[in-house]
Image (cartoon, rainbow, N blue to C red; front, side, top):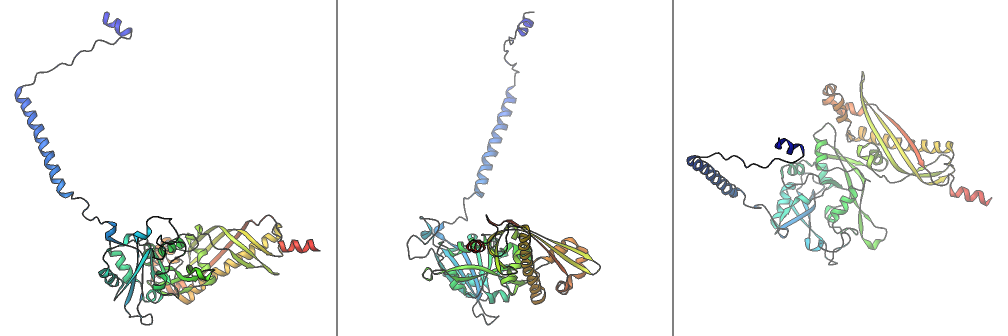
Amino acid sequence: MNRVKQISQGNRPPHRPPIAFPVSRNKKRGLNNVAKRIHRIGYASVVVLSLFCTGCWDAAEINELGIVVASGAELENPADPQSAVKAYVQVARPSQLAGGMSGGPSPSGNQKAFMLEEGTGPSAASALTTIQRRMSRRFFLRDRRVIVVGEAYAKRGLSDLLDEMIRNPDARLRSYILVAHNTSLSKLLSLSYPLTRLPADAMVELEESHQAVTINVVQFLKVLTGKSDPYAMGIRMLNTSSGNQGKIFGLDDVAVFKKDKMVGWLRGEASRGFFWVQPQSMHMRMNSMSIPIPGGGWLTSQLVVLNNVILPSWGKSGPRFTINLEVTDDILENMSRLKLDQPRDSKIAERTIEREILKEIVLLLTELKKTYHADIVGLGDLLFARYPKQWRTIEARWDQVYSRMPIQINVKVHIVRSGLIGDSVLNKSTSQGR
């Protein structure tokens, strides 16, 4: 009763010590032996494993490495397709990169933040080996961000360069590929860019500025091993506005490849047409475009949003494609008689921009299909993904089918912002003067 009363009143019963069962001496001795055996096995395991953990056996200090930030390859004699290959490596100087601001010239003033070395060999890999033999430091290729090739070398084919990069475990496959346009690689890679210490950084910033269609080694290889043809952006040297400030880089034209060999350039309106149909162009900030307006004057528009969809279909006559573009634009300048605050004139402006974009895409497709017979838009991959069985019936003659395949283009433009005034400032000043 007292125990029940204690529990009902919330008091815990008194603690009782656990019952100790007697253990024999032999059993205790056996348990001790097992524990000692476990400890011995643990010590032996630690000793054996330590033999395989010899520290950073492949570590290298930064003062033992030549950090390659860019490389290049061109023919020693561009007029001879069988000429030897001249390779270039742009190696950073860590002492010149340390301290100071992240951009601008090197801290020591006249000394560059990089050095450019060159070597010659029958292939790109052997030419790099020639340079390595003269270098006191081992090449570190994992920071290489840009690979620039000469135009003549690109026309001969990039197979040896790509094969070396795939097999080299130190190569960085995310490096961008560029083709030098009317420029020698020695001048291009030795140029001191005014805004960055390393020219390679300036090239990468141009590639990542969302104003050009970029491609790296992985993407190039993926397209090359697929059903379409690769491409690359062209780079050339441009004069700055003030001549005493040197030169800068420019990415404008597009190098067209047929398999691994370059076959030509897309320039002007054709290159702009290529930007409209690329999937990555939806994230681009394209330069403004000036468009002549019927009746005189022009409009300058700026791309805000781009949605492009390429749809394959297969009928009785074979494959065909439909390209749908939906563009949202801002008006940066109105030097025409149009009053953009009026719905009628706004529609005229939209239709005019649509015709200009349509013309650029038609020029692109005509040049690719009739002149180069190259599919850098990726139509073959889209067709194979959608109709794999039918693709096998035309794969052997895809070039002929591609050249005469019908492609329908639909462009829709929306002007969302035209400014605080609908009329041109010139028109308003003229009307007020009257």
